[in-house]
Image (tube, rainbow, N blue to C red; front, side):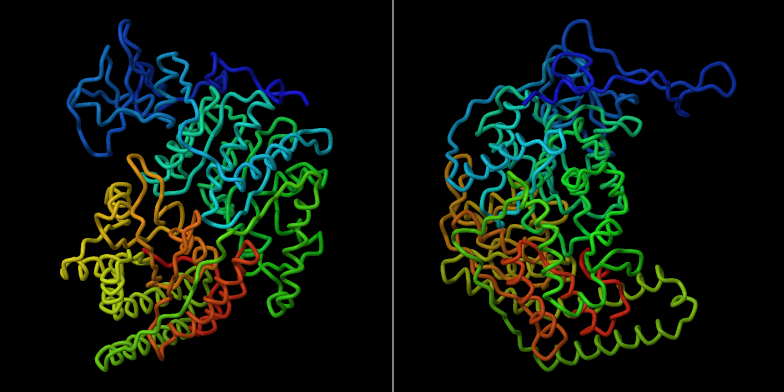
Length: 604
């Protein structure tokens, strides 16, 4: 099969991959000429005749001596042969958009030659990489396949699987520029991917690792700054909500609407593809290709699925299961299987799912008996919640406006959850203390910072137990390594994805602490996708970690925990969660009129 590189525009310079500028000149209001009403764009700071232009990662609001703000590039720079020691901490990191911009400014190659070292893939990973290559070498409708979906269980090593697959595809297609999109927090995810990539080798590729928040940096006037041949979209379910700016930028960077023969090859990674088929919007180009249709045919993704006779309907402006499917799990399963089959039945298959060989995480409910004072406080909070819903129902002006009604209802649910969460802080701290005294390390997931994570951490530290904090403005990677190396026997965290907290992780300088991990979800997530991802933070890579779902007995938390533990178990077997449980949660709270999407993520 011929290389797709021949179908793309040539690069402006060797290995740069930059998109040639258009002839249209954009103006800026920041700088005016002598002619009234006319403006010009600021010129970039030139590269010195001797030395290099260093682009620096200076935090917003900080002034660093020896740097100059480049208004054209919108970054701080330093010109000189060497970077002064005081500026070294701000230097652009390898494989980032800032380093790419710096290399382009200096007309340097930008590729890092890294030979494989110290990373031996498991059979599951080499087999997965071979499947990715097989998909990439197939042709659909006369054009190379434009993507593949890998949904292996959390913790099975999808990072290395995807990178090995990318290297094979790059050799086959003659690729030069590749993009790896990772989840947040970037302080952890970018170093994790960079370490894997450099250890596994780069084959002379120019590699860019980017978080969703940085996608705007990859665009110039709405067009890709660099042309990518292959893209890895880690946690690709993050790009399902088409109304968000993040998704719009993702689509531009990945050339979502390009004809099939001109598009990059996209490797989609997620253990939790969607709540229901209508959320698989990020797969629209691949599904369009499988059906022999242009991507434009799938612009209204839900309507196209409806034409394919999937049991969907619009509710509150979004596509979801229709009433019949919502009430019948068999119909939902059949609908999900239909969409999965479009990719799985291709030859070779365009999707792959393998369960973790070590099985699902052990998962149990952990009831907390409230004291009399705590019970009274909870009843007060529940009464206030019901009163807030009654006041909302009586407010005709708010009820006549769906957006305001949704926001007000969601806020009332959030207040109740936070008050209930605070009542169990002491119990969670006591649980963690017992885990540590038993010689294990405690992993505590929270959805809220001020109503869970911070008071739990403070409670434990007051008792003399060191705690690693993975939330807020902390140096997240430093905190993670502190826990992984055993310096802190407890970790409290809020992210649901892209964290490795398992025993025995291979780290620079030696493996992580071998102590068994034990997890507690202090705030039970209302999303099956998020819940399953959380379990996989410490139950991964062959390491078993038992998990508990905390709740207060005799409260609505108990009902919801019972609903969601079933959802988390089911998600393990279906490689995706189901929105039906959100309807049950809404009914338990008495807010069935709320769109289920309003309940999925209520954290701070």
